[in-house]
Amino acid sequence: MNSKHPAFDKVDSVVYRVLKFISYLAGIFLLAIMLLAVVNVVLEKLHKINVPVSGIGDTKQWIQYMNICVVYFATAFVTLERGHSSMDLLTRRYPKIVQKILNAVAYLAGTVVFGFISYLGVVKVLAGQLANNARINETLATSFPQWPFGAVYAFGFAILSFSCLWAVVRICFGKNVAQEAVDVEAKNAELLEQAAQEAAAEEKEDDQ
Image (cartoon, rainbow, N blue to C red):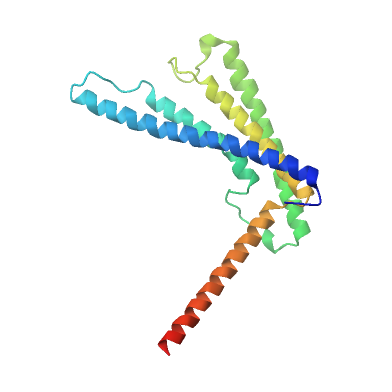
């Protein structure tokens, strides 16, 4: 998109595609949650009418922990594309250079915070559980495997931290997705207003 920096555009395109691909994994897990819930309900209903089947074991835990995959595989891409809710009623009135600085500072803060959380996820969750398999599940007295979802948790925050950092790089190279989104929104609002005016004019002509 930015012809002034072709090398950056190529790298940005790769980053975009990778994070988008990871976000597709969130959709796969969401579909798995739906199928698991439906199959489990059907099996339970069949069991109640004396069919020799039973529900899937640990279904509730699987659904709870697969939700982690749904959230943390998607957040990095959503953050990079500014798909999250943004409270900019005040900052949108600032000069563009001030908006860029504030956005960069916010993303840098996110890079540090999310990176630190990912670090804690690796050290406190993965390292502790993998080092002692006898205590792999500290919260539930079952054999349900939690460490893979701990890995997803740490990985999700790691790519979220990278996404925030790359958003800063985008701002430095002049690719301000936030401003592009505002411009698109303003253009769409203008087009809708123009269409409404044309419709009102046509209706007025028909009445005459």
